Length: 525
Ligand code: SF4
Image (cartoon, rainbow, N blue to C red; front, side):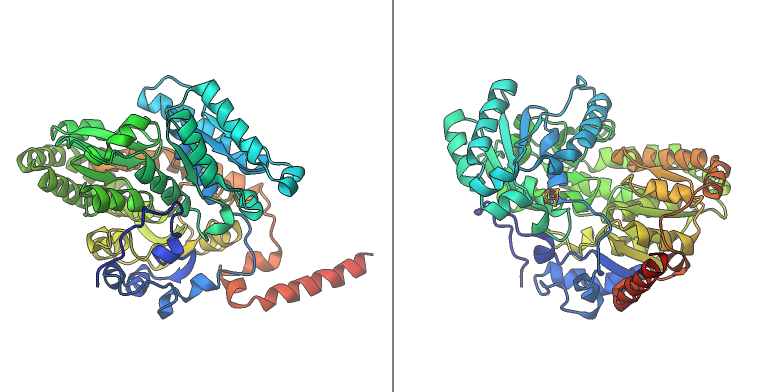
């Protein structure tokens, strides 16, 4: 049986949990998760539903409450909101757009990294109020489209929905189509209301679905030296690498232009820094436009980078150039890595990031001789859209570098993160989302919040990571002092727990705690 193709005929994307069987909670060894995921069968289209086997059971039992998480809308902001000549209109109450401020600093940073003029994001919120929830807000959205067009003369406009617009049934698809006819530019509806998907990564797919449907050229003229690079707003580390192979970079989606996105269908291949991010767009380009995506280990560590480059070389017919580059880079970095390995003897690291990216970073750490026994991945996709086992990044990690004893899948719950760190006691941690970094710091663990996702890629990426760790280890004492002067907002009972999923397994404990609290309140009164 073949895996089902992506359906670009409908405006809405199929959620990750339905399409890929994505889960947000799991605890065990990485090797058990590899086994339970059964990537190969899912890739063949044989296992579609989460929960069809024992290992996925927890996805339906994630816990009695959520302390804090993200929303698909935020992922839309960090992609559609960062295209340099497009505008994103978020049709929502202003609270949903609070993330625009964070995205603005990311965008400005990205502009500086990529050599663009530094400017603010072009995002607008329709600011829905109570009366809009009663009487509808179609007029507000139409006015916002008009304002966006007059103020920014964009090459495309994205319209993002929200929980509120879904509740009142705003017909954003029809408004987009009407505006597109009036303005003569693509107006792309994005169904990204937070309650629609269990995990926020569906937001990536929503934007990529819209781009595939409405921006990508349907009759492309192929460019044999063009490589699509699906990434976020990190540094351009790809151009120097691909220059060695006589290839040119076409970035998607952040900090690029609408014209570049239209050219995605003209490229020779598609690559990425993370299969979590690229899964939908890369598979769609291959299925609908014949652009082959690279199916290989991700470009982390010597082994991953070698295999990744060799696959790019095979697909683009540049084998000799790639081999020469690999040899040259091995000669350059191997002695430096050996030196770092001596320094990192006995050091223990921990990774808390999105899933495929975590797999890449653990590979780098282990090649540097750092012990990694624990990791928190913010979700887990048992399969990616290509269905190709060469993209099974967790299996590649486990088979290439060994098992991870404590592999936790959790959508950034701080209270669970506390238990994980308490049990693991790492010397440092890498965190991709900065909300968790202060907690680690208060526990005395030096934390590195990786904002530049591309800094760890390729041969130079190994050295960048090593230098960062050397720097952060120098502040171990500072973190110990911070720990000694910090208090945490949890009860003594929770601070004593070792199992981060105890409330998932025994939700009745929460009732007991509530009763105890009431008894105490009575005493206090
Ligand atoms: S979950 Fe809903 S209400 Fe919350 S930010 Fe996302 S769209 Fe807005």
